[in-house]
Image 1: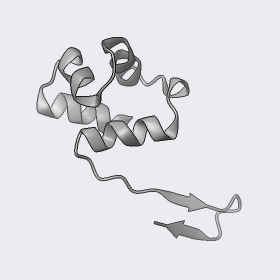
Image 2: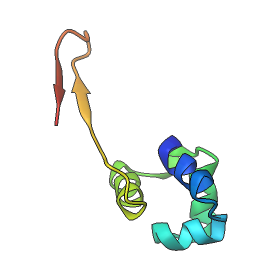
Image 3: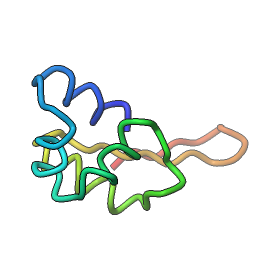
Image 4: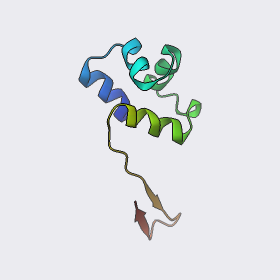
Length: 71
């Protein structure tokens, strides 16, 4: 979410323009920009990042933090 917000600020897009680029309503774009993460699934965030032409990298860590895996 931070990367999407930074993208919007960096590119100078209004919330309406960002909503159109991300393929969501302006209300959803507003939720995104205000950090309301509980309103978005992982797939939705990845789709918005792809629409913004951002690279998506994911990683998984064991609970103990002893082993990591990056894809």
